[in-house]
Every structure is written in structure tokens, then in C-alpha cells.
Length: 127
Image (cartoon, rainbow, N blue to C red; front, side):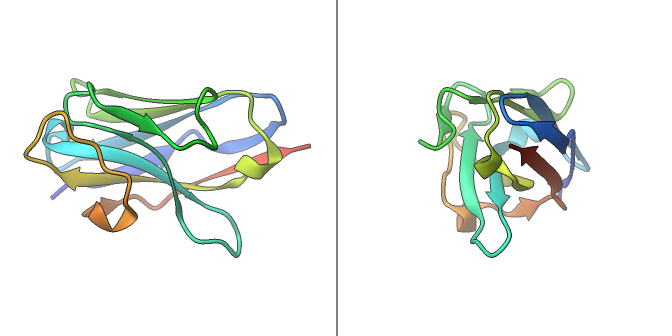
């Protein structure tokens, strides 16, 4: 079983950048496909980005494509979300998620596919 801890959130002005980290423990992150989701107040949790076990498969939602980049360092057991050109509508709690995956190149965009979740980190973008 893997534990996930997000960090790097905070308050930033529109147009600014943040880098979120998701540190894993209890099991090697290389066994898991990883994803980032977010949830704004009063809204459902939505998919942001996903990365395969190997890092070869990557997918970003249309709302963040070209601004956010997911990456992973399996040696450090950490997954990242680089967020640039932030907008007020990016304000949300950001969650890291892990899915046991037998396919090294597969990524997953459906929330229910994931087995494990972190506690989340707040990102607030002011206008």
C-alpha cells in the first residue's frame, strides 16, 4: 500500500507559477500510474493530468494543456505538477492519486480508476 503526501500549494497572483509535489512512501512509486485531480468549492473533483508508470504516457486536460506539466522521478518516489500562467479558475484543492498498473505505458483519466489518494494541497490564485 502506498501513502501520498502533496505539498507546494499556496497563494499566487494570476499569471504566476507553482510546482506541486506528491511524495510517496510505503511502496515504490514505479508500480503506480499517477494522476492529479482538483476540486473547487461546490464542484466535483475533476481530472487535471495523468502519467504512466514509465513516464512515457502523459495526458493533460484541455483546461490546463499548455500551462501545466506532469512529471515523475521514480528514483525520488515523487510526482510533480508544474503549473504556469495560473488563472483564478485554477483555484482548488489539488489531489495526487495512484493506481496499481500492470501496463508501464498506460495512464488513467477517470477518478474511480485510482486506488489511493493524498489529503490534498490548496492552491489559490488571486486576480
